[in-house]
Image 1 (spheres, rainbow, N blue to C red):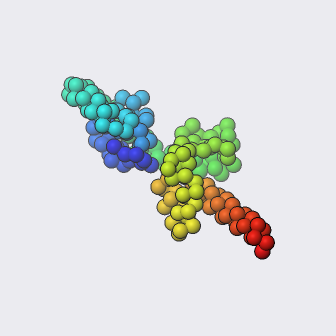
Image 2: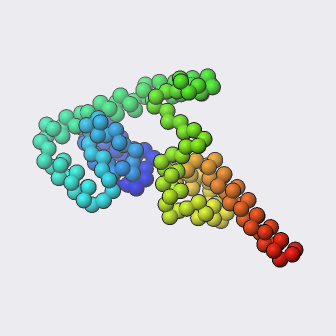
Image 3: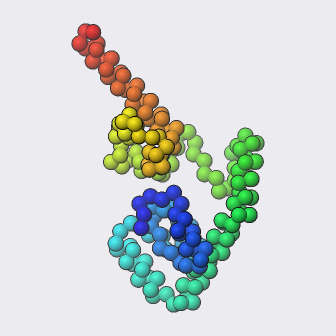
Length: 180
């Protein structure tokens, strides 16, 4: 089980080895269900127990077939030739000015108004924007916070700058109220 995971190499390794896996929704492996290679479950004991019970009810041939589907999926999507082809397609798209109509289907692009699900979770969690800004002002690295919260460093820098501007405005307002 994981609350947040940017990839989860052990999941890919298990699938490549032909092992069906149980993955929590904190990991980006939702396709596991459509590939029929395992279970993608919510966090918690009950969903985990239910998935484990379902796995134990499967016959060896059923589990072997799930494992084979996962193995084929990993070979199709993550062998070097596939990764190279996607990387070259991405570079071609970037070099051509990133036209929207030509965007590779596997590239997720957010408009400037949109927010990634990870950024939305960070914003809505107990780690609210003010707390994040305070962590930045205390010297925490934007890169480290970006990885931890799933928020792009540019967005964190924007929050920092907005937070500093708001604090400066409050200080100036206080100076005005005190007549200084």
